[in-house]
Image (spheres, helix red, strand yellow):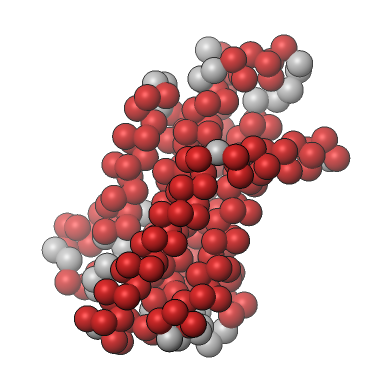
Length: 238
């Protein structure tokens, strides 16, 4: 257990030195918040009611879907994998450590947005902060599950970022954070429901842990876990 925690802390420190992780978990979400937060609240003042959930969904989606897969690809598509195997370290440890590290970074970023949004744009603070952060945690966990699939499934490291972006763009554009999901064509609305961002945003915007939002997230997470187990076994055989 101590070795596992040490590995997680070490991975977190390595991520702090990683340009990709710093850019995707902190720099881009903060820049998007500064620019789009001002645009949204100027054009549509009513968006202050949902600004914190919207910015949180963007930050989590960016950090998870674009930040985590390259880290996993680096572990399982390089000599790091051989080092794991040579020392008898389970390959699943790399997946666990990167996920824990990314989870901490994304939770910190979500807390930063929660604190500065009311000060910067007079955003409404959720009525129940406990429910809000439960929603944040659930969204982070499920989003990391999806990003883990990308990191494990893509065989070519150079293509990892491309696949991440292909998932990230519809995930955010169809989630309802840019414009109401009701305005989307029916087909686009159905596609949006395949991504955790849509359900995570609805959960935080409603500030209620209701079954109609939690069940889809739970289903996506279970599917992601099963796929990760299958992909890990394939990685071990390579």
